[in-house]
Image (cartoon, rainbow, N blue to C red; front, side):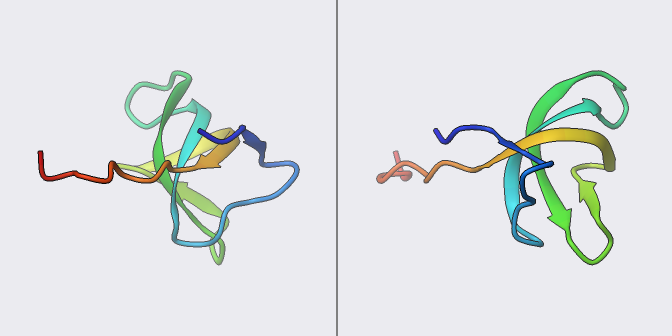
Length: 69
């Protein structure tokens, strides 16, 4: 896995799914780690609803080499 990247340092590429850490997750309003998309044009995060207070993100790992098992 990669190191966490602060949103204060840089944002991920637009429309790319990334792993995020957020304080205000849809439906639970709690801190969570999950997969989301950042839309640069709207400056919004989305994963089954808009996500707020994202503090860190990192690229997703590569899938397993043999994912047909």
